[in-house]
Image (cartoon, rainbow, N blue to C red):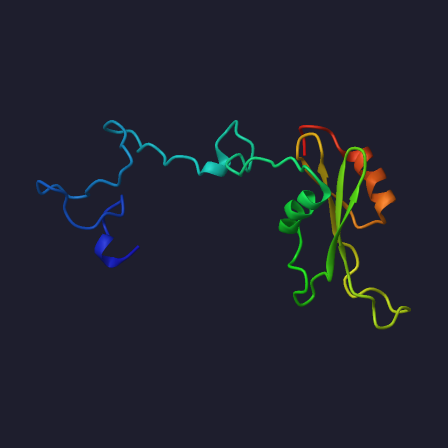
Length: 153
């Protein structure tokens, strides 16, 4: 709070039109003796709405190349420092597994610099994006089949 707004519980400095102090904050005030009406909920926390409800609609992939384009948003840029050298797509009956190709380690006997990570599966039927562990393709698809529940991704 600045000195100019000191003493004004609404945080408004100066006088409103007509000489009244306090001005208008844009939020309606309650009746005499009642607290003011609280501000509106931020869009991401409105009760009854799912988080991300304002997100763009899901895109249903039409091909492996289209799935690759959708998947680019989930990985660092190809060729960036510390980023993948390529993005790969593995098509299967229910969707497309999109995963990063990393450069070969200089010392194949050394542990990985950053173990772990995730891959994504984009469902062919509705465009749901599901993260799965960074396993070889067949193992990652098996995990997807165990975890995925339509409409909950």
